[in-house]
Length: 323
Figure 1: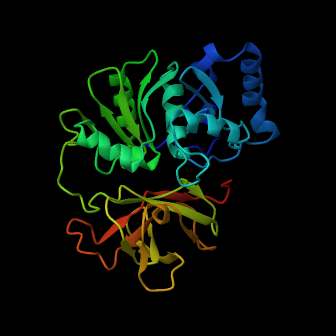
Figure 2 (figure 1 turned 30 degrees about the vertical axis):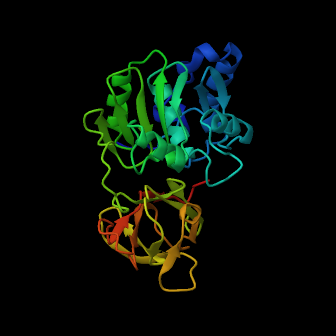
């Protein structure tokens, strides 16, 4: 299930309303929000969001009410810095900031389930910290999305974790883990779900990039727009990548069009994590509106026996009214 943001922000898509956080908002703000909702479509339509699943732009985390996105759709740096600090992510490094997609999903879940404040058990993890947790027998996967700044182990105030699990599972958008206790794991990796018996985090067998994925930074783009993307869940470097990424339609058929990564050779060698998280290319100017994915082919595979020959990226959408 995908929540379409084409009609505006959370209060227009079903991931609201603002009343879900009424205990944290003044009556004046509520009245202003209602006024905007009623008259906004007449005066000026809200901009199309960058993500399919969005909240109202306000996240309540560790008892703090943080506005990270304005009603006009602009992300607020001060708010994002506060969120990153709570997750212990380095906002000063653009490649290590908490994923905006992840923040929006957290917000949407909080709004839809009318939860209180999130309590954070575990946020961003460096590869060193993740490896340390694994060596101590903790629930930490080899290719954990915590290392991608796109995961958290949390408690949602006033909402049973089993309810969060069921709701996120119904969205078919993310990873959700439920450990039959108060907290749950949520990430914006591939759609999957597990509990403490099926997580397989204790597996010591080298993955050799078996679970590698590619994610565009946004869900929604304009034709001709620059796209930044990241390899995630990679366990081994270097990685050889064919710099020509074919654009594939939602039904699996090829478009015959490509994005091209900058590379002096026919096989781009991604040497490490930083490079893997800062890939850039430009979409074709002529690309029909619709849902697509990128087909990535690997070259010079470095004897990673489990690494796939090719993968499809996370889906994205082309819309002429994208921000």
